[in-house]
Image (cartoon, rainbow, N blue to C red):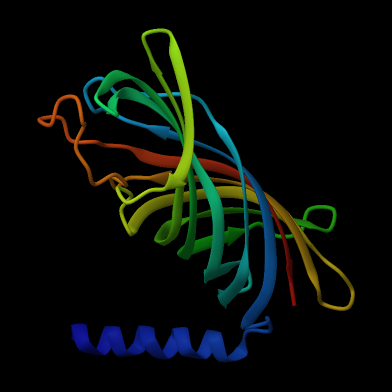
Length: 223
């Protein structure tokens, strides 16, 4: 009996999908200025402010109803954050303030839910997950000890290759007569995996730990 109900449900779903008059796929591009920061719960480490960033990418949407779709594609991200912590440089013990400049590529997987048009605009909510792969990591350092300040810049080797995040967004989109859709949204990307791999130089019992977050203004066009 249960198998018959499942089979009947599948037939009904396929029948509805076959008769649905909506575009099955959308492809497009996005650009997104960002504000990013790092949070930490490691001993003696603290967040040291926000940093401006930017992202761009390719968008793919698979529509399974007129107002619901799965989204994926790829995003190239230029972001990071700032941390302050005790450090040792050239045998001197002091305070390090480091700006992390991270370049990565993210593969998102989201569910997008739209309203019916309101004065021509469809409003949407979006939720899902992102997986990022590190391409490059650089640091701008300001090291303070005994009233002396030293600055340095270089590549970083203590940043993890993989980052997982929760994505939450909302916005609106407008479809032109030619079928092109223009959209604008606000998206929060909350990292939940530790991106640092090293230990503190002053106290090696302390594991470095930080999570990157950013908010982006997401402008996109779909064809």
